[in-house]
Length: 223
Image (cartoon, rainbow, N blue to C red; front, side):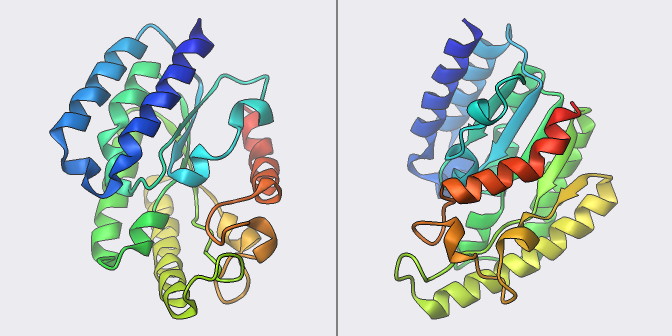
């Protein structure tokens, strides 16, 4: 029964991903989040994988079959969206949160380092206030090799990601959060994603996900 409810939650999260940029300011979606949180209150899950489409696209249950996990990834999500969705973590009584968010903030033409820092700082503070152990992943870059993305835009976005990763590292130190540097593992020296880890230039393929799973395995198995 618990697995059925978590699968239902996953389908609901797909629904709210239709217009992620408007997500944080949409009271209609907030109503649904609160409703789903009430539905999930009888269930407890130890570990949440929390973030955007890179999280959503990974099969965490198969990677860690002996652990109580839930995939709370939403395609296109931004830092503000994960703040709005915190009631879901409360409802599931999450103890450990593997956080991978911020890439879509960096891809926005409105990216601001000061705004990103303020919102990420708020997110970590709110997770810490809940007594949740947080493992924050840095953001891997993107690449024009796979999908014919505009190289100029890719360089600009990767520069934003480098700035964001520096902020994430700084805030992890401030909040006493465990930092998992996936960018260092998955990126080239210029900050672009190594082409072998993606089929479309942005999202991880099986090889990329396997690298991610293996990097997290030590942390997961210790829980």
